Structure formats: C-alpha cells, structure tokens
Length: 438
Image (cartoon, rainbow, N blue to C red):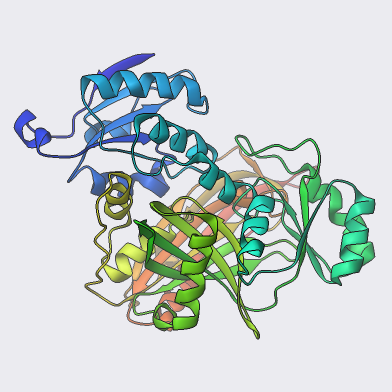
C-alpha cells in the first residue's frame, strides 16, 4: 500500500473547511472525469485505487494505492487508518463492481450508506425481485433458474416472449429476448455464461427468466437523502441489436414531464422503500407498459453511458456534487437552472474486424448545425472489435453527444456526426485487403 499527496490546487486552510470524502476508484477518464472535477470544487478527495493516480492528481487531495480495490477487508483497514489521521465525512463509489465493498467501508466507519445488505439487494437481481414483490411493487414476473430445463419450465409458465438475464451483471450484459422455445434453447448459454470481471458470481440459480415488459425504456438517476428520493434526470433509452438489449444511445429532456407524473414518482419512491434504500445514489430502469411503469432494475450508483453528464448539461443539476453530498450525510442540491435537450449515441463496427484507421472526417462533420458537444474516438488501430453481442459496451468505437433546444436538433446533429465517422479495417478470418466500412 502506498500513499501520496495530490494536487487539487487548494491551500491547507481551504481544505480544512471542506468535507473529507473517500472515493473508491474513478473509472475511465472519458466517462467519469466530469464527476471528479465537480466534487473537487467543494470536497477534499482521498482516492483509493489500484494504480498510481494519473489524470486524477489535479482533483484529489491525496491517494492510497492498494493491491486490490475489490478487496473489502483490505480497503476497510486502509480506510480506518486514514480516518484516524484525518476523519472522513463520507465514502463514494460509482463503479458497479465495488459498491458493496464501499458500503462495507461506510458501515465500518459509521458513515452514511453503510448498509451492505441494501446494496446487495440492488446488485443481486433475484434478491431485488424478491424484495420488490414482497412490497407489491410493479415489475415483470421473474423466476430464477440454473438449467435449460428449468428455464423452459419457467418460460412455459410465464408465457413467451421472455427475457433471459444474468443474476449478478448490470449494463444489459448477457440479457437476451427469447420469442419462443427454440430461441430460448439457442440463447440460454449466452445468459448463463456471460462473464464480467467483478460481477457477482453464482454457481447455481444464476439466470432470471422474466416476463417481457413491452414499451419504451427509461432510466432515472436520483439522489436519496434520509429516505426521500430526489430525481435528477430521466433518460430515454435507445436499444439496438435485437434480440439483445444493447444500449446504443440515450436522450435526456431537461424539462422532462414524466418527472412530474405522480404515478411514476410514487412508484420510484415505493421501490426505494421496498429495498430499504435511504441514503445514496441510484440508477433505476423502467419499462413504460400499457398497464403502467414496470421496474426493470435498481442500481446503487450513478448511471453510466454519460447519462449523468447529459443530465448536468440539460438541467444544471450536478450529479457529482449530489452524490458527494448524500455520501457525507448532506442534503443534495437538485434544483434545475435550465431546460435543454441532450443525447448520446454509441458507434460500433458493422462486423468483426481488425481496425487499421478511425477518425471523424472534419470535412464531413456537421456544418451550420449548432449543438455538437463531443465526438470522441475510442478504438485504436490494431484492435480486433465486433458488434454486439460479441462487442457489447467494450466494442464501442466512438461516441457522440449533442445538446440543444429540441430532441430533433440533437438527433440531427448526432446523425450528421455519425456519418462523418470513417473506419478502415480488415474483416476477421478474411483474406480481403483493407476496406473502408463507413
């Protein structure tokens, strides 16, 4: 374990007036730097991570490098030592694989969010279903199974189509729709054997067979303080690559009318009450069915895919500061000061290939269209990539965000920028020469 001071640009006197926050890991810079940048303006941040800090140094007060930031006992020991020297006000994490360990640290130090069983009730999708069902929360029917035979029996009872979902994985990974028995037989191994580092692993009863909730899908990021849920932003999902549920884009309305819908707000509060979630940040997903909203899952963290970023750009509500506030037992600031639209689109290769070159062609980028926010290339020459289901979130080669006065404006800007993305590569297992694919 090593420790070093950071360079947050604050004097000792300035720092003493700021709450002391322990942050567990940061995630990828492209997707999480904006959160840390905001938090550093009001908090002294001590970072636990598994490698020496790099870009994080400009935002943190200090850091501890640990052998493994998935090891709760190791982090509890380090946190106790830090807490004795410089008392902590809160512990925060937005990485799915580390949220239970983070809750255990908070529990050991007597800080907000210190209820690992509640967090487990969000990470374990079967446990989520059980607790919501006991409280009468609207959700799809769900049966946990281990074998194909059990899955077939459950689907026969529920009725096709059904959704197959891994019990301990998030981000729609391993989730697939089966329209009939033949498709269930075809896709069961995919749901059963999808693996993600840091995910909860079950030797048996590892797959959920669920009723398909037909309708648009949304997600809501909220700050929860002393049991009251404060919604910050609502995102409309764009799904692709059926029968898989790949999240290829999101749209956020800064003046979202559904966040004033009593039925949805009541359902959101009831879900948190049912899970015993009283303090922290959540990312909750719903399907808007003809019979009302049906809860798909609850995640005890901020949303991914730049959804909180779009929420910040379109409402002015800062998700990083809200997350830090509730982690430290402080009421979050969730009042909007603007009402714009924002969208993100993720790009993929059209088939499995080895990338030789990729860029946004400046000459083909949107001209005369206001609203282009980010156009970021993620793939590198030499990478072998595939579209979903092989590629999933790790197969994304670029992303584009737009912020504007209307959903139509955002979609037009993104479509124009996506048309300017040029990828050259060689198909895998093919002798063909390099060829442009977009």
